[in-house]
Length: 93
Image (cartoon, rainbow, N blue to C red; front, side):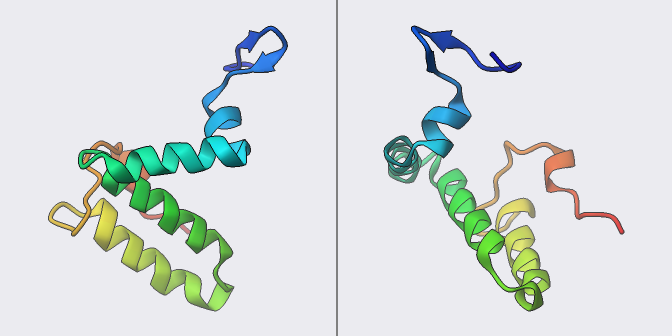
């Protein structure tokens, strides 16, 4: 099995497989995040990152700025304080 993955009876039980790659697992996990007040910002961030990945190149800079101010800035409307400084640092270059 690849590093970080566990096998149980031949089934991959990693978070990525269960909650990202599998459509029903992804839907259920997103609903869980959105339904729990302490995790709602994380669910919203996930949805916004997926939308960012689909946006046109010309829209990316403005979209990234909105993401940073909403989720990565202390005092932002849905600040995700659980994220590391490395995860929230603006890209360099």
